[in-house]
Amino acid sequence: MEALVGCRALNLQKALDLYTAVAMTSRRRSFDAARIINQLRETFESGCTKKAEWRSQQLKSILRMVKEHERDIAEAVFKDLGRPPHQTFADEILSVIGTCKLALKELKAWMTPKKGLSLLWSYYSEGAIYPEPFGVTLVISAWGFPVLFALDPLIGAIAAGNAVVLKPSELTPATSTLLANIVPQYLDPCAIRIIDGSGSETRKLLAQKWDKVFCSGSPSFCKTVMAASAKFLTPITVELVGKCPAIVDSTADLKVAARQIVCGKWANNNGQTCISPDYVIAEHSIASEFIGAVKDTLKDLYGEDPHISASLSRIASFSHFARLTGLLDDPVLSGKVIYGGQRDAKCLYIAPTMILNPPLESALMKEEIFGPLLPVITVDTMQQAIQIMKSLPKSLAIYVFTNKRTCEEKIRDTCAANFVLNNTISTYWQYKSEDQT
Picture 1 (cartoon, rainbow, N blue to C red):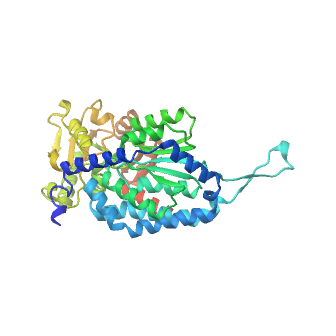
Picture 2: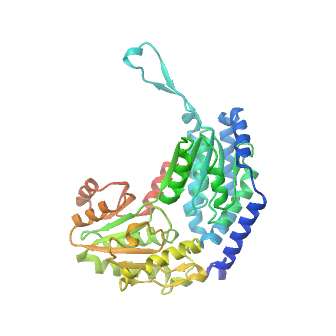
């Protein structure tokens, strides 16, 4: 328990030492990206990855790997992110298991040709749509959920019959090293390779021609991946982040709103989640009471001093710590921090923090925060809230706390991938879990 309190077990210096060791090891075992792709292409051209038996065997092996290494995975993620083991089990391990079970259940249906519609001038002919794998694919995963973001797209690529190269994030070195060690023990090395290393390894991989690329991360990183893929006209899927707003109006149950926003923001990877609430817009008439409810909930969850709480994740890396403290130290936010603000660089710790009415042109409101800072913006009407949301980039989710009578109007006037009523991330994960059973 002592290791879980205060600084995470791997302090900043040890993290930097481990990162350096991983980078040096990667350089020592320098790889030939073109040669790896040629080997995988030979495997793919042999047709073995297209067989249902091969796909099923690999998926079952992933399932077995995750179950047999639950403790190792939780420990590695704790070293990288300071995330409590039970959260890793709930957010990553169970999600990967659910995805695997879904793929195994639906594999036969996914591989079955579908009857195609005949056009008028070919009325007497018959057509069919045959699912075909792309070929040799590249998966570049992000660090926020280093196991889920690595294995989830890997499962999809395998289920579709592709050969795969997986590149885990270098910002979570303990998890990446673990995956690099255990994946070859369970999966077919002739068709599935994992490259553990730094950004230079990623650049070498992107310099090659792929049949499909999948990546998740920041807009700037995904632009780099897209530019590299465009040289070869390679199809690419990117999962981008976004500024997800939470709206609290005067009809909301403020205790429920505070509890759900705290859980979605700080209890889920300390804000380092692409669908965590990025900022709150609250009606002025209830803003003070709502802020008080959030403070009470934070004290209930993490005590008077969250620094010593074993339930609060730490910041992933020093570069992200510096970015977040830079946002917080912006002169335009002077006097606007109404809760928290404490930080400890040695432990990569930033306290749960609320900022009241930051300028919309500030960096805090222009880019995704991806951390424990929560701006609270007060408005007189919900129409003002909608205008603020429309002025910012589209989000993956909008969390609205209101009564159901006014819900429809807000759905019509806003646009996002998910619209969640009186809840936050837990609804997203519940939907994902139900979809995978």
